[in-house]
Image (cartoon, rainbow, N blue to C red; front, side, top):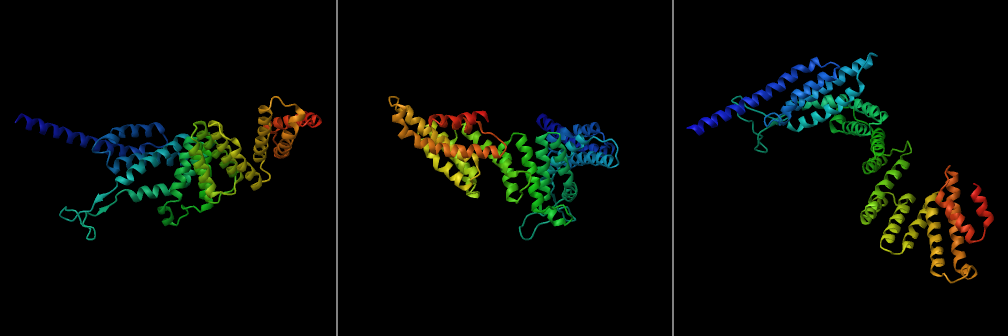
Length: 398
Protein backbone atom coordinates (compact mmCIF):
# COMPACT_ATOMS: atom_id res chain seq x y z
CA UNK A 1 0.00 0.00 0.00
CA UNK A 2 2.79 2.38 0.94
CA UNK A 3 4.52 1.62 -2.37
CA UNK A 4 1.34 2.50 -4.27
CA UNK A 5 1.00 5.76 -2.37
CA UNK A 6 4.64 6.65 -3.05
CA UNK A 7 4.22 5.83 -6.75
CA UNK A 8 1.12 7.99 -7.03
CA UNK A 9 2.86 10.82 -5.23
CA UNK A 10 5.85 10.56 -7.58
CA UNK A 11 3.58 10.45 -10.65
CA UNK A 12 1.69 13.46 -9.38
CA UNK A 13 4.93 15.33 -8.78
CA UNK A 14 6.16 14.54 -12.33
CA UNK A 15 2.87 15.66 -13.86
CA UNK A 16 2.99 18.88 -11.86
CA UNK A 17 6.58 19.48 -13.02
CA UNK A 18 5.62 18.93 -16.66
CA UNK A 19 2.68 21.30 -16.33
CA UNK A 20 4.95 23.87 -14.72
CA UNK A 21 7.42 23.66 -17.63
CA UNK A 22 4.64 24.04 -20.19
CA UNK A 23 3.30 27.02 -18.28
CA UNK A 24 6.81 28.45 -18.30
CA UNK A 25 6.90 28.19 -22.13
CA UNK A 26 3.50 29.86 -22.35
CA UNK A 27 4.58 32.67 -20.03
CA UNK A 28 7.72 33.25 -22.09
CA UNK A 29 5.63 33.41 -25.25
CA UNK A 30 3.47 36.10 -23.68
CA UNK A 31 6.56 38.18 -22.86
CA UNK A 32 7.89 38.35 -26.43
CA UNK A 33 5.95 41.47 -27.36
CA UNK A 34 7.51 43.37 -24.47
CA UNK A 35 11.11 42.66 -25.61
CA UNK A 36 11.24 45.54 -28.08
CA UNK A 37 14.86 46.46 -28.82
CA UNK A 38 16.05 45.51 -25.36
CA UNK A 39 18.64 42.73 -25.41
CA UNK A 40 18.34 42.31 -21.65
CA UNK A 41 14.61 41.66 -21.98
CA UNK A 42 15.35 39.10 -24.70
CA UNK A 43 17.95 37.41 -22.51
CA UNK A 44 15.42 37.31 -19.67
CA UNK A 45 12.95 35.45 -21.88
CA UNK A 46 15.63 32.96 -22.93
CA UNK A 47 16.69 32.50 -19.30
CA UNK A 48 13.10 31.77 -18.39
CA UNK A 49 12.93 29.18 -21.17
CA UNK A 50 16.25 27.52 -20.35
CA UNK A 51 14.84 24.91 -17.92
CA UNK A 52 12.36 23.87 -20.61
CA UNK A 53 15.27 23.19 -23.00
CA UNK A 54 16.34 20.21 -20.87
CA UNK A 55 13.05 19.14 -19.30
CA UNK A 56 12.02 15.65 -20.43
CA UNK A 57 8.53 16.84 -21.41
CA UNK A 58 9.22 20.16 -23.08
CA UNK A 59 12.62 19.70 -24.75
CA UNK A 60 11.03 17.49 -27.41
CA UNK A 61 8.20 19.90 -28.18
CA UNK A 62 8.54 22.19 -31.18
CA UNK A 63 6.78 25.01 -29.33
CA UNK A 64 9.59 25.30 -26.78
CA UNK A 65 12.16 26.10 -29.46
CA UNK A 66 9.64 28.00 -31.56
CA UNK A 67 9.06 30.48 -28.72
CA UNK A 68 12.80 30.98 -28.24
CA UNK A 69 13.25 31.57 -31.97
CA UNK A 70 10.37 34.03 -32.15
CA UNK A 71 11.88 35.98 -29.26
CA UNK A 72 15.20 36.19 -31.10
CA UNK A 73 13.67 37.31 -34.38
CA UNK A 74 11.49 39.83 -32.53
CA UNK A 75 14.59 41.48 -31.05
CA UNK A 76 16.25 41.55 -34.47
CA UNK A 77 13.20 42.96 -36.24
CA UNK A 78 12.64 45.74 -33.72
CA UNK A 79 16.27 46.82 -33.90
CA UNK A 80 16.17 46.67 -37.68
CA UNK A 81 13.14 48.97 -37.67
CA UNK A 82 15.03 51.45 -35.51
CA UNK A 83 18.03 51.33 -37.83
CA UNK A 84 15.88 51.95 -40.90
CA UNK A 85 14.35 54.99 -39.17
CA UNK A 86 17.83 56.31 -38.40
CA UNK A 87 17.35 55.78 -34.70
CA UNK A 88 19.72 54.20 -32.21
CA UNK A 89 19.81 50.41 -32.41
CA UNK A 90 21.86 47.54 -31.03
CA UNK A 91 23.25 46.13 -34.26
CA UNK A 92 25.58 43.64 -32.63
CA UNK A 93 22.94 42.34 -30.23
CA UNK A 94 20.40 42.12 -33.04
CA UNK A 95 22.72 40.14 -35.30
CA UNK A 96 23.66 37.77 -32.50
CA UNK A 97 19.95 37.24 -31.81
CA UNK A 98 19.44 36.53 -35.51
CA UNK A 99 21.96 33.67 -35.28
CA UNK A 100 20.27 32.46 -32.10
CA UNK A 101 16.88 32.50 -33.79
CA UNK A 102 18.11 30.33 -36.63
CA UNK A 103 19.53 27.81 -34.16
CA UNK A 104 16.27 27.62 -32.19
CA UNK A 105 14.16 27.24 -35.33
CA UNK A 106 16.44 24.49 -36.63
CA UNK A 107 15.76 22.56 -33.43
CA UNK A 108 12.01 23.17 -33.70
CA UNK A 109 11.59 21.96 -37.30
CA UNK A 110 12.27 18.22 -36.82
CA UNK A 111 10.06 18.22 -33.71
CA UNK A 112 7.12 19.84 -35.46
CA UNK A 113 4.87 16.90 -36.23
CA UNK A 114 1.37 16.35 -34.84
CA UNK A 115 -0.71 13.21 -35.35
CA UNK A 116 -3.87 13.91 -37.34
CA UNK A 117 -6.96 12.64 -35.52
CA UNK A 118 -10.51 11.64 -36.38
CA UNK A 119 -13.51 13.20 -34.67
CA UNK A 120 -13.41 10.48 -32.00
CA UNK A 121 -9.78 11.29 -31.22
CA UNK A 122 -8.25 8.23 -32.86
CA UNK A 123 -5.29 8.70 -35.23
CA UNK A 124 -5.97 9.02 -38.95
CA UNK A 125 -4.25 6.20 -40.82
CA UNK A 126 -2.48 6.59 -44.13
CA UNK A 127 -3.99 3.97 -46.44
CA UNK A 128 -0.74 3.54 -48.38
CA UNK A 129 1.59 3.05 -45.42
CA UNK A 130 -0.80 1.83 -42.75
CA UNK A 131 0.80 4.31 -40.37
CA UNK A 132 -0.68 7.37 -38.61
CA UNK A 133 -0.82 10.60 -40.60
CA UNK A 134 1.15 13.60 -39.38
CA UNK A 135 0.81 17.30 -39.98
CA UNK A 136 2.98 20.25 -39.04
CA UNK A 137 1.88 23.12 -36.87
CA UNK A 138 4.75 25.61 -36.87
CA UNK A 139 6.92 24.65 -39.85
CA UNK A 140 5.35 27.00 -42.39
CA UNK A 141 5.77 30.01 -40.09
CA UNK A 142 9.37 29.02 -39.34
CA UNK A 143 10.28 28.60 -43.01
CA UNK A 144 8.56 31.84 -43.99
CA UNK A 145 10.46 33.69 -41.27
CA UNK A 146 13.82 32.24 -42.32
CA UNK A 147 13.30 32.91 -46.02
CA UNK A 148 12.11 36.47 -45.40
CA UNK A 149 15.29 37.11 -43.37
CA UNK A 150 17.70 35.47 -45.83
CA UNK A 151 19.36 38.75 -46.85
CA UNK A 152 19.57 39.78 -43.20
CA UNK A 153 21.88 36.85 -42.59
CA UNK A 154 24.06 38.10 -45.43
CA UNK A 155 24.13 41.57 -43.86
CA UNK A 156 24.94 40.00 -40.49
CA UNK A 157 27.86 38.20 -42.16
CA UNK A 158 29.10 41.55 -43.49
CA UNK A 159 28.76 43.10 -40.03
CA UNK A 160 30.72 40.35 -38.28
CA UNK A 161 33.35 40.20 -41.02
CA UNK A 162 34.00 43.92 -40.78
CA UNK A 163 34.16 43.60 -36.98
CA UNK A 164 36.69 40.76 -37.48
CA UNK A 165 34.39 38.37 -35.65
CA UNK A 166 35.15 35.72 -38.20
CA UNK A 167 33.50 32.78 -36.43
CA UNK A 168 30.11 34.47 -36.40
CA UNK A 169 30.70 35.89 -39.87
CA UNK A 170 31.31 32.40 -41.23
CA UNK A 171 28.21 31.16 -39.42
CA UNK A 172 26.00 33.95 -40.79
CA UNK A 173 27.18 33.52 -44.38
CA UNK A 174 26.70 29.76 -44.06
CA UNK A 175 23.08 30.27 -42.99
CA UNK A 176 22.56 32.79 -45.80
CA UNK A 177 23.78 30.21 -48.29
CA UNK A 178 21.69 27.41 -46.80
CA UNK A 179 18.48 29.42 -46.91
CA UNK A 180 19.15 30.90 -50.36
CA UNK A 181 19.86 27.47 -51.81
CA UNK A 182 16.97 25.68 -50.06
CA UNK A 183 14.12 23.96 -51.88
CA UNK A 184 11.66 26.08 -49.92
CA UNK A 185 13.26 29.32 -51.11
CA UNK A 186 13.28 28.04 -54.69
CA UNK A 187 9.60 27.10 -54.46
CA UNK A 188 8.57 30.60 -53.33
CA UNK A 189 9.75 32.36 -56.49
CA UNK A 190 10.10 35.60 -54.53
CA UNK A 191 13.78 36.33 -55.01
CA UNK A 192 14.93 34.46 -51.91
CA UNK A 193 16.63 31.78 -54.00
CA UNK A 194 19.93 33.03 -55.42
CA UNK A 195 21.61 32.25 -58.75
CA UNK A 196 24.92 30.38 -58.74
CA UNK A 197 26.90 33.59 -59.25
CA UNK A 198 25.57 34.97 -55.95
CA UNK A 199 25.84 31.62 -54.19
CA UNK A 200 29.49 31.50 -55.26
CA UNK A 201 30.07 34.92 -53.74
CA UNK A 202 28.43 33.82 -50.47
CA UNK A 203 30.68 30.75 -50.35
CA UNK A 204 33.71 32.95 -50.98
CA UNK A 205 32.77 35.25 -48.09
CA UNK A 206 32.17 32.25 -45.85
CA UNK A 207 35.59 30.95 -46.85
CA UNK A 208 37.12 34.39 -46.30
CA UNK A 209 35.93 34.33 -42.68
CA UNK A 210 37.17 30.77 -42.20
CA UNK A 211 40.57 31.76 -43.63
CA UNK A 212 41.08 34.78 -41.39
CA UNK A 213 39.67 32.77 -38.49
CA UNK A 214 42.58 30.39 -39.26
CA UNK A 215 40.35 27.42 -40.02
CA UNK A 216 42.24 26.63 -43.19
CA UNK A 217 40.61 23.27 -43.80
CA UNK A 218 37.16 24.88 -43.85
CA UNK A 219 38.50 27.77 -45.92
CA UNK A 220 39.91 25.38 -48.53
CA UNK A 221 36.62 23.49 -48.80
CA UNK A 222 34.56 26.69 -49.01
CA UNK A 223 36.81 28.31 -51.63
CA UNK A 224 36.60 25.05 -53.60
CA UNK A 225 32.80 25.22 -53.51
CA UNK A 226 32.90 28.87 -54.61
CA UNK A 227 35.12 27.97 -57.56
CA UNK A 228 32.77 25.16 -58.57
CA UNK A 229 30.03 27.78 -58.65
CA UNK A 230 32.24 29.68 -61.14
CA UNK A 231 33.16 32.48 -58.74
CA UNK A 232 36.30 34.20 -60.02
CA UNK A 233 36.53 37.55 -58.21
CA UNK A 234 38.45 38.90 -55.19
CA UNK A 235 41.64 36.94 -55.97
CA UNK A 236 39.90 33.68 -55.07
CA UNK A 237 42.66 31.62 -56.67
CA UNK A 238 45.23 33.23 -54.39
CA UNK A 239 43.04 32.58 -51.36
CA UNK A 240 42.45 29.00 -52.49
CA UNK A 241 46.18 28.43 -52.98
CA UNK A 242 47.01 29.85 -49.56
CA UNK A 243 44.32 27.84 -47.76
CA UNK A 244 45.40 24.73 -49.64
CA UNK A 245 49.04 25.31 -48.72
CA UNK A 246 48.14 25.72 -45.03
CA UNK A 247 46.01 22.59 -45.15
CA UNK A 248 48.84 20.56 -46.67
CA UNK A 249 51.42 22.12 -44.35
CA UNK A 250 49.39 21.03 -41.32
CA UNK A 251 49.61 17.46 -42.62
CA UNK A 252 53.34 17.80 -43.25
CA UNK A 253 53.94 19.22 -39.77
CA UNK A 254 52.32 16.11 -38.30
CA UNK A 255 54.19 13.89 -40.77
CA UNK A 256 50.97 12.61 -42.33
CA UNK A 257 52.58 12.30 -45.73
CA UNK A 258 50.14 9.80 -47.21
CA UNK A 259 47.21 12.02 -46.19
CA UNK A 260 48.99 14.97 -47.76
CA UNK A 261 49.53 13.04 -51.01
CA UNK A 262 45.86 12.01 -50.96
CA UNK A 263 44.82 15.64 -50.53
CA UNK A 264 47.06 16.70 -53.41
CA UNK A 265 45.82 13.92 -55.69
CA UNK A 266 42.23 14.83 -54.89
CA UNK A 267 42.91 18.42 -55.87
CA UNK A 268 44.74 17.32 -59.03
CA UNK A 269 41.74 15.25 -60.08
CA UNK A 270 39.80 18.51 -60.39
CA UNK A 271 42.74 20.66 -61.50
CA UNK A 272 45.23 18.44 -63.39
CA UNK A 273 47.03 21.38 -65.00
CA UNK A 274 47.42 23.54 -61.93
CA UNK A 275 51.13 24.31 -61.55
CA UNK A 276 50.74 25.26 -57.89
CA UNK A 277 49.22 21.89 -56.94
CA UNK A 278 51.78 19.93 -58.98
CA UNK A 279 54.56 21.89 -57.28
CA UNK A 280 53.01 21.14 -53.87
CA UNK A 281 53.10 17.43 -54.64
CA UNK A 282 56.82 17.79 -55.30
CA UNK A 283 57.26 19.48 -51.92
CA UNK A 284 55.46 16.63 -50.13
CA UNK A 285 57.51 13.97 -51.90
CA UNK A 286 60.70 15.85 -51.07
CA UNK A 287 59.74 16.14 -47.38
CA UNK A 288 58.81 12.47 -47.23
CA UNK A 289 62.13 11.46 -48.78
CA UNK A 290 64.02 13.66 -46.31
CA UNK A 291 62.17 12.01 -43.42
CA UNK A 292 63.13 8.56 -44.71
CA UNK A 293 66.68 9.52 -45.76
CA UNK A 294 65.64 8.81 -49.33
CA UNK A 295 66.20 10.48 -52.68
CA UNK A 296 64.86 14.03 -52.75
CA UNK A 297 65.35 14.12 -56.53
CA UNK A 298 62.13 12.10 -56.81
CA UNK A 299 60.44 15.49 -56.43
CA UNK A 300 62.24 16.98 -59.45
CA UNK A 301 59.81 15.75 -62.15
CA UNK A 302 56.94 17.49 -60.37
CA UNK A 303 58.86 20.76 -60.05
CA UNK A 304 59.80 20.53 -63.72
CA UNK A 305 56.21 19.88 -64.73
CA UNK A 306 55.08 22.92 -62.74
CA UNK A 307 57.40 25.15 -64.76
CA UNK A 308 56.07 23.63 -67.98
CA UNK A 309 52.44 24.13 -66.95
CA UNK A 310 53.05 27.75 -65.96
CA UNK A 311 56.21 29.43 -67.31
CA UNK A 312 55.47 32.42 -65.06
CA UNK A 313 55.32 30.45 -61.80
CA UNK A 314 58.44 31.49 -59.84
CA UNK A 315 58.12 28.85 -57.12
CA UNK A 316 58.46 26.01 -59.62
CA UNK A 317 61.66 27.48 -61.08
CA UNK A 318 63.04 28.06 -57.59
CA UNK A 319 62.51 24.43 -56.62
CA UNK A 320 64.08 23.05 -59.79
CA UNK A 321 67.09 25.34 -59.32
CA UNK A 322 67.34 24.36 -55.65
CA UNK A 323 67.35 20.63 -56.45
CA UNK A 324 70.13 21.18 -59.01
CA UNK A 325 72.06 23.25 -56.46
CA UNK A 326 71.72 20.48 -53.86
CA UNK A 327 72.87 17.92 -56.45
CA UNK A 328 76.03 19.91 -57.06
CA UNK A 329 76.58 20.49 -53.34
CA UNK A 330 76.31 16.74 -52.70
CA UNK A 331 79.02 16.00 -55.28
CA UNK A 332 81.30 18.55 -53.60
CA UNK A 333 80.62 17.12 -50.14
CA UNK A 334 81.23 13.54 -51.30
CA UNK A 335 84.59 14.44 -52.87
CA UNK A 336 86.51 16.42 -50.24
CA UNK A 337 89.89 15.48 -51.70
CA UNK A 338 89.24 16.90 -55.16
CA UNK A 339 90.48 20.36 -56.12
CA UNK A 340 88.22 23.02 -57.62
CA UNK A 341 89.72 22.25 -61.02
CA UNK A 342 88.94 18.56 -60.62
CA UNK A 343 85.41 19.24 -59.40
CA UNK A 344 84.56 21.75 -62.13
CA UNK A 345 83.76 19.22 -64.91
CA UNK A 346 81.42 17.37 -62.54
CA UNK A 347 79.82 20.34 -60.84
CA UNK A 348 79.80 23.31 -63.22
CA UNK A 349 77.26 21.92 -65.76
CA UNK A 350 74.85 21.22 -62.91
CA UNK A 351 75.44 24.69 -61.48
CA UNK A 352 74.70 26.25 -64.84
CA UNK A 353 71.40 24.38 -64.99
CA UNK A 354 70.67 25.61 -61.47
CA UNK A 355 71.60 29.15 -62.48
CA UNK A 356 69.17 29.12 -65.42
CA UNK A 357 66.23 28.19 -63.22
CA UNK A 358 67.18 30.37 -60.26
CA UNK A 359 67.64 33.43 -62.46
CA UNK A 360 64.20 32.81 -63.89
CA UNK A 361 62.71 32.42 -60.40
CA UNK A 362 64.37 35.61 -59.21
CA UNK A 363 63.30 37.59 -62.29
CA UNK A 364 59.69 36.39 -62.03
CA UNK A 365 59.49 37.22 -58.34
CA UNK A 366 60.84 40.72 -59.01
CA UNK A 367 58.31 41.21 -61.81
CA UNK A 368 55.58 40.34 -59.31
CA UNK A 369 56.83 43.09 -57.00
CA UNK A 370 58.60 40.71 -54.62
CA UNK A 371 62.14 39.58 -54.00
CA UNK A 372 62.52 35.92 -53.16
CA UNK A 373 65.33 35.77 -50.56
CA UNK A 374 65.93 32.06 -51.10
CA UNK A 375 66.30 32.44 -54.86
CA UNK A 376 68.67 35.39 -54.32
CA UNK A 377 70.80 33.50 -51.77
CA UNK A 378 71.11 30.34 -53.88
CA UNK A 379 71.83 32.36 -57.00
CA UNK A 380 74.66 34.21 -55.24
CA UNK A 381 76.19 30.88 -54.17
CA UNK A 382 75.95 29.54 -57.71
CA UNK A 383 77.66 32.67 -59.12
CA UNK A 384 80.53 32.26 -56.68
CA UNK A 385 80.84 28.55 -57.46
CA UNK A 386 81.07 29.39 -61.16
CA UNK A 387 83.49 32.21 -60.35
CA UNK A 388 81.13 34.80 -61.84
CA UNK A 389 81.83 37.23 -59.05
CA UNK A 390 80.72 40.30 -60.99
CA UNK A 391 77.21 38.84 -61.21
CA UNK A 392 77.29 38.03 -57.50
CA UNK A 393 78.34 41.60 -56.68
CA UNK A 394 75.59 43.08 -58.87
CA UNK A 395 73.04 40.80 -57.24
CA UNK A 396 74.20 41.81 -53.79
CA UNK A 397 73.54 45.47 -54.61
CA UNK A 398 69.92 44.84 -55.57
